[in-house]
Image (tube, rainbow, N blue to C red; front, side, top):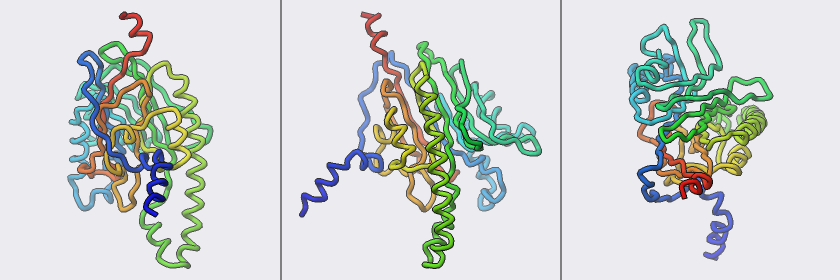
Length: 309
């Protein structure tokens, strides 16, 4: 009887490692290899709306200060917010120009006062190319990318993604399971939105994969997948790229800062890259997502090694 659960664990181990891992740090790379440190974070518009910081008026400033002072070479921020007329929320300046970083902003919305909502990539290294992935259906969700030129002359393509939201709040799930009647009424609505999200993300991830397959450079994808590791969306990306949590994480790696235990934020990277370190910063709780922090090495391509020999 004891062998049966053990057999199931062995047979489905590839699925288990998507939810729970026990990795140990790899050996240090050669000193000449180029290291790149990365921060990926859904910042929840820096808690700029009053209802998001009613219990802590200093929450927006504390989050902004933490992000602006983070030492990562590359920052990929989802649910980004910028208002050039407001000194506190002039985030392009606070995170970018004042810190010597170049940036690319993908604007999903500009409100009536000119404030911008969307995605952002900040880089300590020069951005030599930038753009966005075009989806085949109207949406405010985005995937943007930049090519950054590293000091050793390598180029890395960095994608920042925020795929279609589940559009479901925790309180809705709690209400739906209160009674059979509530499940029948609210459950249908939740199921309908889940289905819509699954379909939208399946189209979006296909466009993303088509785009990254054309990349002439190693690829790093950061962001809010809005889907779990057993989903179609995750599996499609995993077919082409390695996942940072699976390769370097430890424990369960939940990234959603709420009651639901979810890992919906990810970093995927080309197999030609080496992951040195990956952490989910669960002690940083400014947003409803935890930040992801990592360090990579761009390994030498076979043709480069042949030239040196």
